[in-house]
Length: 208
Image (cartoon, rainbow, N blue to C red; front, side, top):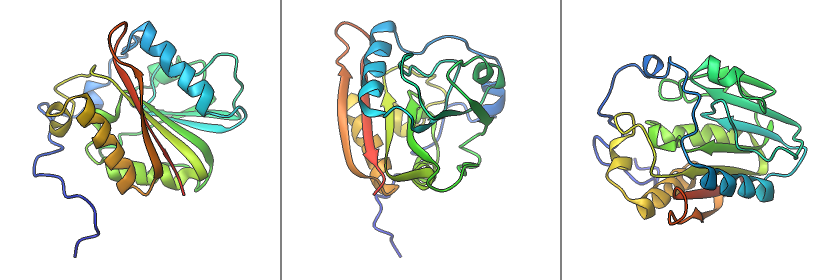
């Protein structure tokens, strides 16, 4: 019996490179994946949307989180695939390694986070609705999930449905993920239209 969710087409979450993700992400990549203008736009969005003092989960994190340097948060928890990158991130108070394509479960308590951020990594998720359902579980009621995206990616590791869509389609796809995971009040913001720096959008959803 259908649960009312949109059914994705067969092969939607296939990748050109279906090899072990752990091996792919084993080398540390201490680089930024969007340019300075896009980073500044994302930091400004975080400044507006993330209240000081809240506990933040940085999903699919790396060696930088792009959070405003002068804002103090209660705790910033990182999840990623590379220990060297995560240990080099000065904004993380603690972190853990997890391959969300293998197991979407997050080792965090229910309603333990005030906000979740996910920067330019959503295109790699093969079980996105399950992942964002877990995000909803760990968020406090009313907590926000901010998923940013650009046109930058490792194309062989991006899922087929992402590669087949353009910027508007990417926004609609991320919004669909959040809607199906139980988020409400989802909205799309264009942070950079790509004319002066890398294009960057963000989809924001709230836990009921």
